[in-house]
Amino acid sequence: MAAASLASSGVMAQNYVYGAVGASDIDLGCVGAATCDTKGTAFKLGFGRDLGGWGFELGYADFGKAKASDPGITAEAKAQGVTLAAVWLPQLSENWGLAARAGIGYVKTTLSASISGVGSASDSEWNVAPYLGLGIHYALTKSAKLELGVDFTKGEFEDEKADVRAVSLGFRYAF
Image 1: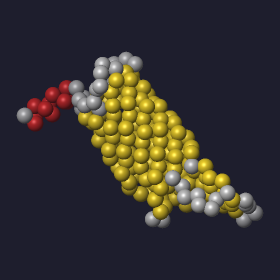
Image 2: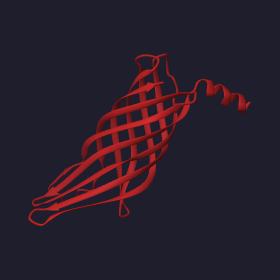
Image 3: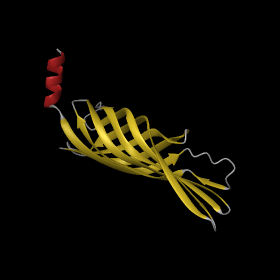
Image 4: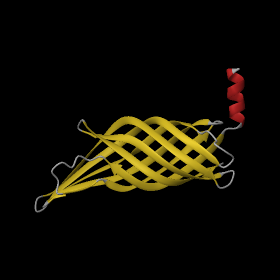
């Protein structure tokens, strides 16, 4: 029965590419900073394979940047990385469907700081973190879909962790 299920899902298998852009939030600890802006611009690109309601995705996500400053001092945190996720793709109706993602992210967190009159420095660190996403999509055609989604992971630098989130609107094209 399992072999028949896999064989039948192979008939329905379909590759797709996707891209999305939206707003990000990096949970930067800004305690004591004169100004703090944790909001940025996020985007993601990737490839997926729908195996008949279930599949997988390999993507790249840029979660934007957060910035904190005091007079004469500025600090910035950026998060970006590669994601690998299993995806559940249930259809709610003929045109509407969901995309629930769970996997891992290989996230690069970069911290930069500058002090007026002294200079600036930057360093980065890679970490592996859980990656989750949820989206709702609308089919424009059989192959083209618009998706409103939210993605979550964690950035890490020297054992300090920060939640990283993005809300985006994107386009998926199946072939």
